[in-house]
Length: 306
Figure 1 (cartoon, rainbow, N blue to C red):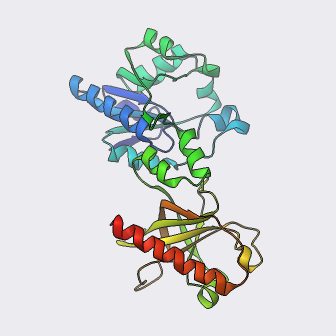
Figure 2: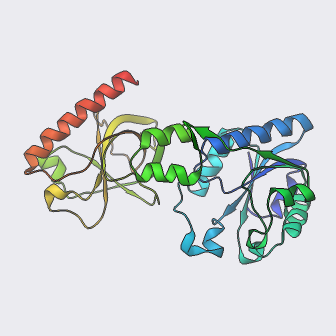
Figure 3: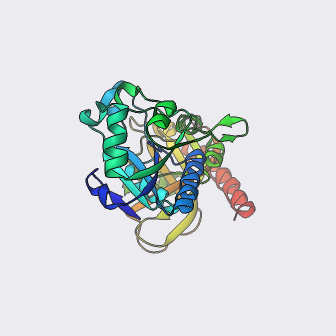
């Protein structure tokens, strides 16, 4: 996959079928739009191309309304490649880009830089200065195909809908919206050693993820990002109320298989199912007993979903 970080670099792409968007989360609606773009490119001997932005435009034009992001730019690009996109222009979104009229955006970015022959967008697409352009505007300037929204169990799939599900702890439904488990990554840091002494030993994740599931216990899958190692696991997100509470949210993971070898320096956690809320127990022993029950539930889950 070819990646351009400036509009000028994208001039080397050649004739393209282009889809435009932020594509935060790369949910099944985005995946459908990518496939439509791929199909259009194949029909016309073009390159399937994504035009996306960094930072998110709202962080430039309306920072107070900017959403918390589900996926970092690098993860978005990797997922685009996974779903068949051949070229990606990650356009730096600046105040100058924000001031482009719809006509200027089409002429300068789509025609001049990307050599777009057809553009595919969702039916709620808006662009140009103060979002003054819509799908009708776009269709009047360049050949355009409007791709309808995708529904899952009666609800339109969107990045904000995925965000709401994760905020509510409904990671199972979020998985259906994403066509994969929601995941977060980061480095392993030393905890206070309480778990290994009084409950069960855990890996403590420090992550820069902007969206974390609701406080509670989850069945998870853990991947060592520095080696080809994976474990079934169970993860608690919370403030450790049984031990007096922490000011900082913690993400603690217990591996269901033995950790053989070095502790992984960086991991990815995939959230598969919510088990329960976090709550305060009367003693570390009571918490440990509950954790053992949670572990049994997780093992049962993985036997049913190997």
